[in-house]
Length: 378
Image 1 (tube, one colour):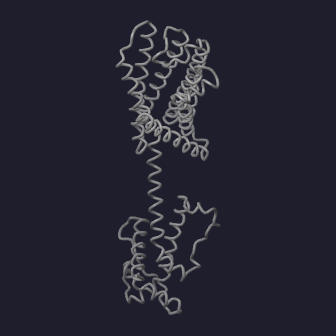
Image 2 (cartoon, one colour):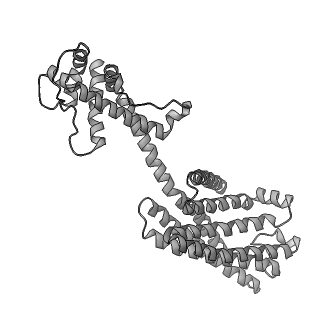
């Protein structure tokens, strides 16, 4: 039961990451690193159903015995190949990376051809056996597992080497995901090497201790979820930061509504140009929320600059007005402006930022004034 739940969680994370990287790839098709990640996840996603008993039975029933096993291994070869391609593109110059990727394609293609031929030449009665029950003295079976295992061990070791090298140069949050990948790949290399040695022992007629097989499988079962987590971790962290920023801008946008409403009614001509409204869900997109946030902040600040001379007269001061003081006299100043009462042309500082925090400090002062204005209205 626990394994089934873990498999479902792994599938959701894997296919979710696949959709996300596919969407990112459509926006930037020239990004070779992103393309390599997408192809890596695509191969992993394609291999997943073939490793499930129901999926394997369906595949074998539609084609021939052993087809699911062959498809799963071919997809796994592609997964580790494209993982290596990602790090090659990430850590080397484009021209050099292209040449290295082409060289890495040769052993991939050779291994895929050999294991396909081995599966075809294996008697059908032997194809449906799992690794634990397969007869390694059957030439086709032995070649299939030895070649696939050798390439997986080699490709995983290469990917591990590039991961460690790139992790030493990367920054957060990418470096955390890379060290997770490093641990996962190290486990995969260990499990793959143990399995390759076990295959050789069985080929020579020996017996492999059961705890060794169980241990290698346990390491692999732990490494696969960690591998997927390492791949998606940087994207999840970035997305979480985007969601937090979206939520913050949305709250500030609504928090400035009392102040903006008063100023907009007095100075409607100061409203920044608005784009034509699109579909209703466009209002909730991050880009729309950020755009409305910045527009509202700018319009509030522009309105305060225009009303500041009247504010200074009403408050009877030439000193910079604090947000709460400005809120207390804002409506009176707006009525004086609407009545056409004269005021100095020189603007007066209103709700100025306390420090050098930039826009966020300015927004904080505007929010204080808007909250004080709403409280006075209540």
